[in-house]
Length: 69
Image (cartoon, rainbow, N blue to C red):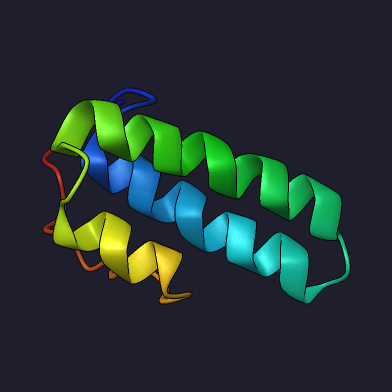
């Protein structure tokens, strides 16, 4: 609904990448992680704190306000 490169979508995708790696699907997790970092750089800029945190291995905060239906 928000689009594949919306920051909230990317945050969820980042967490999914970490989850994939945690359950032993390392190659798939790494591929998704790299795609998310590339998208974050395009959308947020190269030095955004979300990118720095992700590269340090921190999960994204996905607490978002509910969207009206």
